[in-house]
Every structure is written in C-alpha cells, then in structure tokens.
Image (cartoon, rainbow, N blue to C red; front, side, top):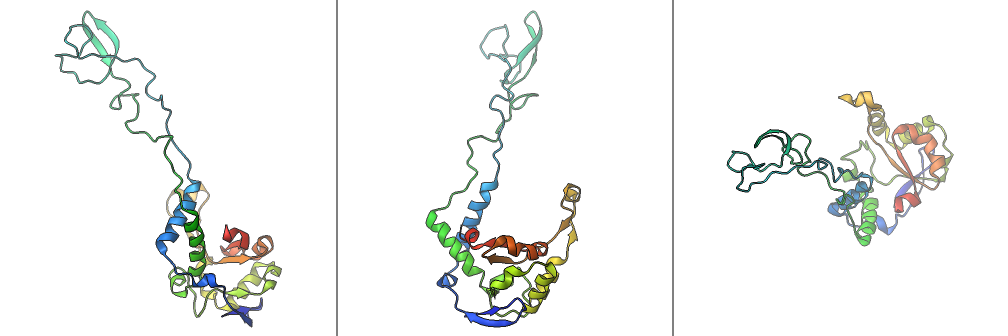
Length: 237
C-alpha cells in the first residue's frame, strides 16, 4: 500500500500497488535492454569502397631489368611511373595504406551491425524490472535527493492534469517532500569546453519521471523542471 496525494500535497487516501512492483530486479538485463534501445539511434558510417583505389599502379618483383623492384632495395608497395630515363624509373606509391592518397588500412565497413538485439521476453521482463526498480527507495536515493521521503512510487490523484503553471508544480512537489530534489535540479552549471559554443551552455540534472494518462496536459506545468513526462502507453512500449 502506498499513499495517494492530492494536488495540494496532502494525503487523500491509499492504493495497493500492482504485482509488477514485486518483480525481482536483474541489473544486467536492465543494462542489456537499455543498450539495445540506445543503439537504435546510432548512425552508420563507412568509407567509399573505391576510395584510394582509383589509380593504376604496377610493380613486379620478377627477375628482370625493366620496371622491376628486384635487386634495387625497394619494398613491395605498388608504384606508378611518373618519369623514366632508360631503365631508371621515378616512382610514386599510390593505393597502399602507407602511401599518400592511398586507401585506409581498416576503414569502417558498411556491413557493420550497430543495433544490438534483445529477445522479446527479455525486453518485456526488463520493462517490469524497470518499473519495480523505480519503487526501490534505496536504489533511487543513489541518484536523487529524496529528503525525508519514506516510500515510492509517489501517487497523485487525477487532478494532476489540471495543473498548468510551473509554480503550482513546484508547490506540489515541495509539499510532498521533494524540495531538496527541486533545488538539485534547478541548479544549473556552465559546461566546460566547447559545448558552450554549440548550443549547450548549461548543464542541468534530470529529475522525476511522471507517468500520466494525458502527456500533453501534464507536461505544461512540469516542462521547466527537467522532468520526463510520459503516458502509460509510452512507458509500456
């Protein structure tokens, strides 16, 4: 049983949690599911298969005097002829990785598989584990400042969707006991390095995940608090 709060921050009742919150958590499975989903945003990169190869180069090691590297102290790098005097050639090495304008030795391949797979049953179980882990106050307190909060998850009645102002959302969260968490989130720092010049000057920490029936209505009040507002449908998929 967990408490149910009104939008005034006062206790208005209690509710029994579903069985999914009792799912045992395996953090290796959670990590695997996260990496599988995160890998879907990766972009494939590769070089042109013909890059560095659009040149004609030939050099033989056969025992002869014309256009050969045999007995001349030359390595086996393919060479193209720029000029010659008799049987003396002025060579420039193309194509090979150790030459100017040559191909890459081990370029990124177009066939590389970037997306990591996960089994359907594992993915379903990972969703259940994630929901159960969100109610583990010992684990959540490692990353968030919960203050004097004694139990998770925090359940608020259906009037939450009627909040439209950020100040009302701050008032609600402070009344519940998340004032320290708000101070942690609203404190922003200037980013070190060149990220300041690229549209991400400030670093801010992420806060709550709010699961609601109507994402559009709820996000109006919480969008400026670095919260993640998701509908039930998005959480389960």
